[in-house]
Image (cartoon, rainbow, N blue to C red; front, side, top):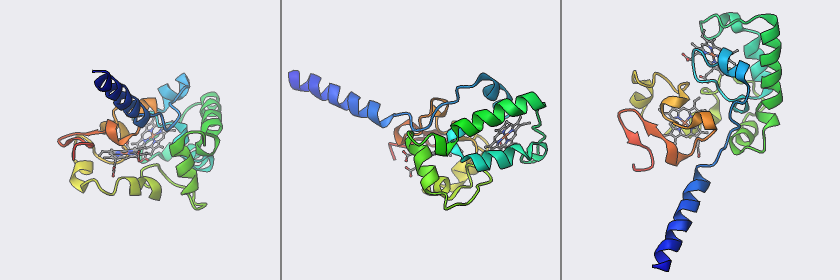
Length: 167
Ligand code: HEC
Ligand code: HEC
């Protein structure tokens, strides 16, 4: 009996460890509102500051959309992104890995970075392009707790496929 209890404790500890927060969750209400209206508000720790700055300077042609904001909001968003960008969040594992894998390039998006592409190379293409997902940019379609900064393999549920851990 004792052994069973102990095993239960150990396995739940292991599970909790694997679901660890690996990216700092968004903690700015203005960013959440302005940059989370068309898609999930991407955590700042997913890109280096030079990439955020490049994106912010082209908000009038943001992936084909106009995402411009007024000057005050622009300052708030830019400073939030710069203070929390990948190189400022290296205490979080994924931000650290993103920085290590940049090779001095300035990425145009998160989903096209070689590191992120590599992390997803085992997923069948049709599961990514299907209408319930549309593309790799749609992190929350598969990573249920992406908003909490959790991207663990154990916490992925792909539409029309199911839990990743099982396969
Ligand atoms: C008017 C809608 C709209 C707003 C507002 C908006 N975006 Fe986007 N964003 C898009 C579209 C469209 C894409 C392309 C992917 C998609 O279809 O969701 C995109 C893509 C992105 C990507 C790349 C995702 C990838 O593929 O890696 C990032 C990062 C991003 N947006 C950040 C921001 C930030 C930061 C803001 C706030 C300043 C913002 N977005 C506001 C429409 C918007
Ligand atoms: C189609 C579903 C899907 C989408 C969309 C998706 N992911 Fe993933 N992601 C996965 C799967 C499945 C894995 C695990 C792959 C493996 O184990 O080979 C994964 C792995 C990861 C990992 C590595 C986790 C680890 O513990 O090694 C990170 C980080 C990650 N994804 C981030 C993102 C981000 C950021 C986005 C959005 C820009 C995104 N993913 C979009 C399905 C998806």
